[in-house]
Amino acid sequence: MPLTPRMERMWASAPVGEVGRTGLSLTHSRFSRDWHLTSSPTAFDGETSFGVVTFQPHPFEVERPELSAAGKADLKLSLFNSGAEFSSEILAAASLPDEAIRVEVNDYLPDDQQSQIEAIILSLGKLAVTTQSCTGTATSVDFLNLPYPRGVYRSSLFRGLVR
Image (cartoon, rainbow, N blue to C red; front, side, top):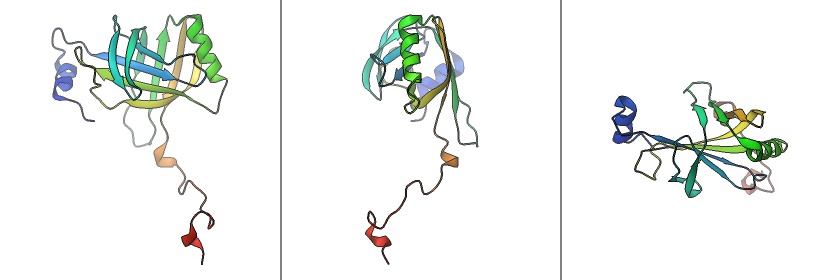
């Protein structure tokens, strides 16, 4: 989804009274609940790939990935004043290496529930966790370097391969 004209205007000129909000969603099977956080000082409802959720205030910083020809996008994420509950859940999720923590980042206008740009959905890894903070790097799939074909083609599954 391309940027809306209103979001372009807000990012380009920062009009008085229009402050964008960033929503961060973290999900994993070992979490007791999905974490929907915002760096905004007040909670708000916003649409995500999970439906409409309430983002709770929590200090964090997102360094967005740059576009590159390498095929990979790395997003640096830092959460501050995390507390013991959040830190223990992140550590429990990190102990299951086969399943990555799913990260979704959305941007919202002040009076809108709908995300103004396409959600960035990544997998969180390279974690450093303390009781006060959590930092990590979320990465996307390296589409340019995926092997092709990715599956094994057998004649039992694909009858047209039999000669």
